[in-house]
Amino acid sequence: MVLLGAVGVLLMMGVWELVGRLELLGRNWQPLSTVVRAFLDNLPVFGRATRATTIDAGKGFVAGILLGLALAVLGLLAPALNRGIGRMATLVNSIPWIALGPVLVMVVSQETVPFTFALLAVFFASFIAITSGFYLARQAHHDLLTSLGSSRWTRFRRLQLPVAVPSLIYAAKLGAPAAMFGVVFGEWFGSSRPGLGALIVTSMRSLRADRLWAAAALTSLIAITVFAVFAALERAALNRFR
Image (tube, helix red, strand yellow):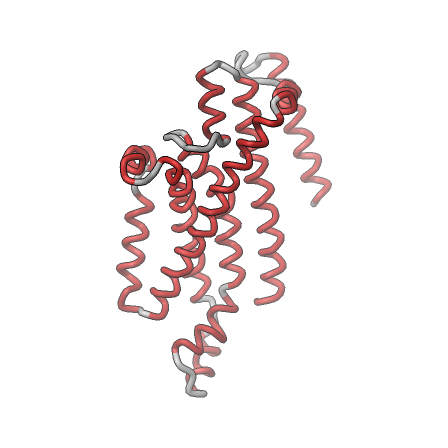
C-alpha cells in the first residue's frame, strides 16, 4: 500500500513537471522544478507565512473541535435541545463564506478573521461526526447499564464517550485540513500577519505565478500531512475502542 502510494506521488510529480514544461495548460502552469526553486529562493518569506497560517489554523482547529464536541454533548445529555442545536449548526454551515467574509471584517478584528473561518470550517463536521459516534454504542450495553441503575451521565462517561473516540479522531482528520483552507480563505479578506493566503493574493497581483504555485502547494502539503497523521490515529483508535 505504501509502495503504491509512493508510485502515485512520483507519477503525479512527473505529470506536473511535464505539463508545465510543455505548456499544455498554458504558461501559468508552472513546472514542479520551478515551484520548488521559487520556494527555496524565498524560504524566509514562506517560513514566516507558514508560521502565521499554521498558528491560526491550530487555534481554529482546537476551537472548532471543542465547539462541535460541546454541542454534541449538550444535545446528547439534553435531548430536548438536540433538534434545535442541529438546526442552528446546519444554518450556520449553510451561509456561503463569500457572503460571510465582508460581515466578519466589519464585526471582528482583522487578525481574528482567519481564525474565525478556520473555526467555521471545523465545527460543523466535528459536530456531525461526534454526534454520530455517540449513537454507535449497542443497545444491549445501554440496557445492561440501565438495569444496574446507571444515570444518563454514567452511561455517557462509561459507554458512549469511549465508543465515540474514533469518531472524535475522524472529526479531527476532517477538521485539520479544513482549518488550513479556512485560514487561507480568511486571509484573503485581510490579516494582520502575512500568512500563506496573503502570500497567494500578493503573488497573484504581482503576476508571480511561481510563488503562487509554491504557496498553494505548501498549503496542500501541510493539509495532506495532518490528514495522514489523524488517519493513522483513527486506525489505531478503531482497533482499541471498537
